[in-house]
Image (cartoon, rainbow, N blue to C red; front, side, top):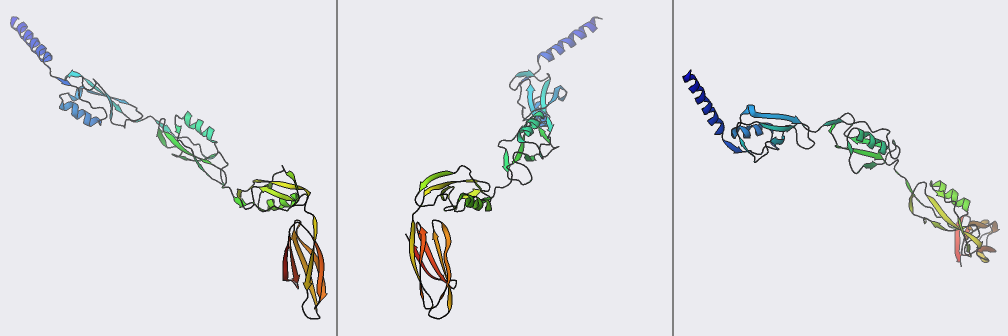
Length: 306
């Protein structure tokens, strides 16, 4: 019995000495390492594989299979017999991308994505479309049904509506309001109903004397054009004395006199005359005038009157 007791005491003393004399090391850093690599580092320092515990956790940024954190922390003095716990990433939490294309307005699409714990990439993309009304989400990336990490962005493309068509503003100077309206409608523009009127001695009452945008300006279809109308009294009436020499023959010839003045372009005289005659006509005009003489439908003369 005495020998047994002495043996137990000796074994206990040896075990105590072994525990007391276990080597201590400075805990290595394995955060960010792949799990197998972290195990190898710890085992090389003297830790037993059975003492290396693994806890799997989601993480938004640390890739799956890599160490998020360790316990004890790096640099801690520990005995190689103690347990080490590694928190290893199993990747970010995944979310299924919902469908937000084909009818949802942007605000509703954002709400739907947020309900799935996903975000909208900034900035939102825009594109013209003939198939989707303005403001409707027409495309998304990733597509519906795919998976994304929780909080990840989804790229949305929103319709800007149909591609705008442009045209040139016509010259409305000298036209009446109704004539101006007709000219604008031909190119799918419209007349601004807010018409200004000013006194003018250059244009007859009711004629357009100014416009905005100016003639030749490129604008989108549907643009309203503002006009300013003459309130009179307009230019005074003048008389131009026109002489037309008929061809040297005995045939009859067609004489035509055309006047372009403040009233526009008008036929001032049409008649037939025998050849070898000089025809004199008094032609009224307003403001500046360009008078053209045609004989047998051919331009025979032209004169400018101030």
